[in-house]
Amino acid sequence: MRTLSKLALGLTLVLAACAPALMPPTLQVQGLKKGKVGITGAKLDVVFGVRNPNPEDISVDKMEFELLLNGNGVGRGYVSEPFSIRGFAEEKVVSTVDVNYLRVPGAIKAVLEDDEVRARARGVFYLRRGGGLKKLDFDSDARVSLGREY
Image 1 (spheres, rainbow, N blue to C red):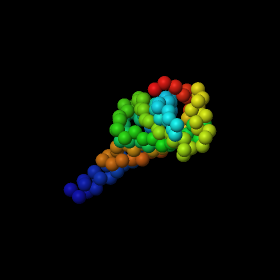
Image 2: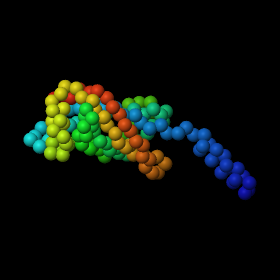
Image 3: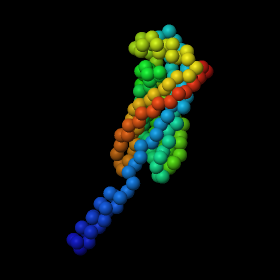
Image 4: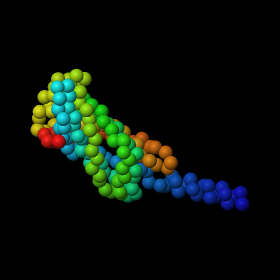
C-alpha cells in the first residue's frame, strides 16, 4: 500500500511538471477618451484589449497600471472588478485615470490636445489560480487616437 501511495505521488508530480505553463495575458491600449477637463486636471478613460493566449479560460481578479503618453507619466489606474477571458479570446476593459496637471510636467496638458499619442501601459495582472493570486507583469506600447468626446 505504501508503494502504491509513493507511485501515485510520483505520477502526480510528473503530470504537474508536464502541464503547460500559464502564458501571461497580453494587453494593449486601444483607445483613450478625454472626459471632464478642469483647471487642475482631466479624466481619461483608457480602453484596453486584453487577450488570453492560453487554451483554458483565465480569471483576472484585478489589474493595476501606470499610463505614459508620449513618454511622460500621466497617472496610475486600476481595474478592481474581476473579469474572465475565454481561451484564445480577447476582452475590452476600461479604466479611468485622473490626470493632475499639478503633479505632471506641463507637456502633458499639451499632449492632451493632440489627436494621436503613443500610449504605454505597464503594470500587473492578478490572476486567480489554484486558490491564490498569481502576479503577472505587462508592458505595452501603442499609437492610439485621443478621443475628444466622453
